Image 1 (cartoon, rainbow, N blue to C red):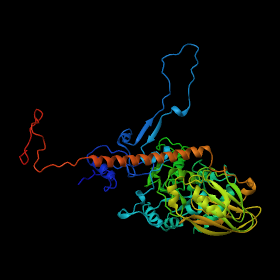
Image 2: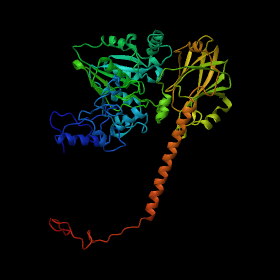
Image 3: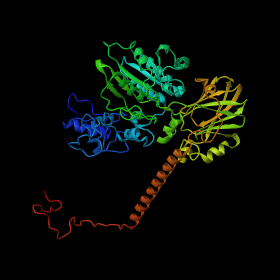
Image 4: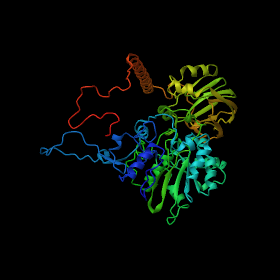
Length: 561
């Protein structure tokens, strides 16, 4: 039984290989190394590549015991000791030759940050419950998160304004208030809304958000702050609001909580940059490289990740509250998630729909007009999602035949088949000729603002389990501002660049299938030709006549050594 020396922090979960390896290192008196991934908080180890926190030994050896590595890009060319007279010497003052600091990350975080690739659906980590089972209800994760919060802390609840209804978790708010935690609602990604650069249009959005947030009991309107974690917009107002809850003489912990894909890790990176935190390594906000891992993959953060601030304050990033009611929970490929989730400024586009016409949203959703006058549907979706208008009579056959080849996402036929048949939701909305009064929201994708005079009945088809909401319109004037676009098949997510990307994906999958088939055939062939080896009982381990090296001798079985 190994025990760590007194005063040494616990080595982690001793039932996992990473915890056992760290316990052996600490008990033997060796210098402790960085034990957690700086991107997701998982325990670092070099045992099982399929477990979270895996890092190859040769890669881990390049980092110091504190988990840091300094890199510097050297200029190309041949160094010289002198230059001829008259030759001008120009000094390069760009930052590309600046020394950069990298923090140790696991393989999964490295692939997400640099290549936008996923290994598979996220499982385990913080989402593994007692007994090794996976979570069944999101209330289990809410209770697990709130139970680990320190008493007397401040909670920042991050909400994605581009997926407001799905990212708002009333159960999490109630659980925090039951433990008497002050809660601030941080509405993220406001820079992605059209016409909201700097302060333009934010007052109208703030009024809409405060009205919608009333569905949460006891939330104060002043505790609703609009920010952009990507650009840093609104952090000055957030700092002013934090002064009302924080006292320099009473240090408190600040927990950042919320739904998965709401932008918590991006918010923590920007918050630390705003307060002047200098121990996060080199951070690229635009490239999403460095710091906490930011990716549209649900469940990127696997454990609590804390950062110490001056005067005893501490900021803690927490795992997101998962949901099975969003489209992003049904897709696992990196290219699908990066194409589906809204991450840049939304460029809305308006198409006209009549009775008997349908709108196909990639290969994951469909909207049919059943009754009513002409509908002007303003779509707020990612530019990598294909939009197509066709007759309702041929919409189902067209989607089934051209999914993953003409409609994206998903980009793989197997992922499309895994979604299963679409389920219909009948929605009745009212429109005006001047503005939109209602929005139809599809959880995890985006929303449609419906305008055009009269009452309309629409059928919204989505995968089973995905929620559909009707709400007051967030941006009601976009149809008037941008006009109606005449539909064309090349408007969204189609073109030579996407065709090349699709061809590369298909070719890589075919190559992988061929490699797996050849390996299986080779193993079968080797097993067929391999002759069975039979060893008789009492046979000599060493053939007769073999002389041992000088200084060695053979020992008979059963003889004393």
